[in-house]
Image (cartoon, rainbow, N blue to C red):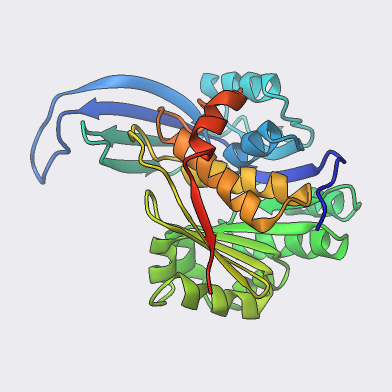
Length: 317
């Protein structure tokens, strides 16, 4: 499939988050107190991270998201705009604070994370579905938090010819798998990303078994990541693997979001699946070297190339 020179259009929908970090020597055990230092806060949120990565690889990216009433949300808006993200359709919610997480990281980059519950809602799916139905989008990524919400947006996008993309986190798989809305949501999908932990949460032995089950539901491409381990990809009748290069890990938060955004931006440009896989693996590796998923942006080509040259990909029998 020849690559396309046309600029792809990516629509992502979800929420932004404020990710706070603390550094400790070792993670506390039960009833143990430890001293730590504040590292700072960074912009996050799966849909936002996805949109930033897609933009870095040449896509025109729109993020439809809800923003909280806190000062950090305003700063995140400004940063996303500076990175070239179109926020048309996004909304401020004056009655809620941003979705917030607190991550405690030790000297070995092991971490524990607490996500603070928030009243911040997902954006109204109706206007997003209407926008997706217009046919202007090559890729539509609704954050996988609510299967019915995803189904509504995904159905409109798929009918308009877009590649619908979902990234399945373990907690979502545990609650939604095999429900009617999940099955309907998967029927709209072209690409699905998941962690190996999500594979296990769904009850499968390995990535290949999970990919087979998911592809029977509808998706053409299924990609499973395993942190620093091998990435598995099933696409039509082909199977691929990618091995990330060794890296000094600082923070793994959001690396999968960056991986997915890079993959889908190149996929929309009609690059080969193997090429998409290699480049996405390189960006994921680059991302874990800094705190904050979006800290690599703006992306410097020479930094990416230095990592990409060390990614090993192969076609599986």
